[in-house]
Image: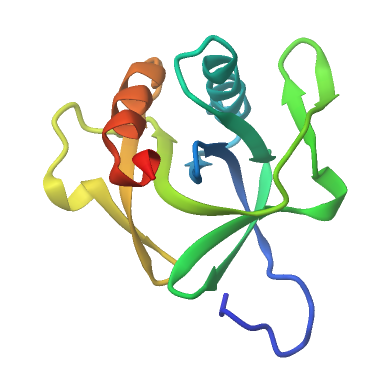
Length: 157
């Protein structure tokens, strides 16, 4: 995906969710059923509980990514904008941000190492290098994410 799409069509989407946390977004990736929507809801709840200053949904399940001014932007696909799946309750409509700058990638996967090597803590998405947090299946990612978000320079802007 390039910064400009000469055909004028929207950039293709990826299987991911995104949540604006403070001034920038986290991109949540993982296979179907890995907990992307659950984690997005947990981040929104953390803002309601005061554990985060602010959080708002950008996208759930499908996210469009594009690069502009050397930054990775996340946007919802139009037909899913503002919608999130709540396990056991179905699809719900929430306030959402139409676009956000991504500052961190969270990968929900079965093979996340307990003590990751520094090279696995950075990922390149669409040519943009970003901090990466890999979370093993069955582990609660919120303590790790809250610690990462709170220490990130971009979260203090």
